[in-house]
Length: 347
Image (tube, rainbow, N blue to C red; front, top):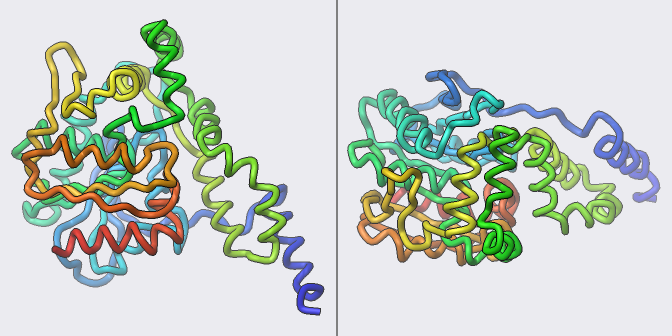
């Protein structure tokens, strides 16, 4: 009788997440704009009580929205940090178009991220900033710290930072093809299109999570009565459906230096003929977090950071649970990743 009584709810759940208007609308944690410029919208998440410790700046990768840190209640690193008494900020890069085709990684490491750090520090009378970067956001944070020793960076937490791409199995075919073509096909594509359009980015993310996509019908059937489980799935789908694209030059640098040449695994990266950034120049505390379940950036790729950050005040690797997004915004993240971050920041 219990199943029969709950059947209408199960039907509504499945209808809502498949063809209806959804189980719930996106309601981000309230925030206030600190500064807004081209591809640098710095926001402070609102809190009503005094914060403890250093301010925390969340640095997302490119081609995602800042929702990665705040999918929904229960899947929000932002809300967790607020609950722990910390003051989080985030830098939002916004959308990219053809006019942004010449933006390169150095625009982030020399301009966008340093300005965000400075703005956050100024909000706290020059205090050091604890940075948390997910995926390429962690790499951007490390490269920024290596390039600007004068910035008030107290620590960097890298969540799934792709430091050794040779450890990423699904990139092997790309690397094999590039041995023959030299990557010229990607250079031409990014030049013609001015970047990677958002539709390609969204499709690529779904392909990387193909097992999840294939299992979705079974997941719906198995969890038809579980509104919370379906709401978590819906939040992830909504996030993937809103991904912006990449600027052309930036994507080519990522493809050439990180994927094909795997430069970070040796401790440095060449962004221009006259610009080489060495990770040995990072001197702040660093926490590296990776998951074996992450097929996009496996734990072994992240762990390589232990070998290429010789002058950091402290370098620690911690293994957490969840996939590439799940290790940041899921029930598994709440049990492993978030407490590891809090423990590191509290030391």
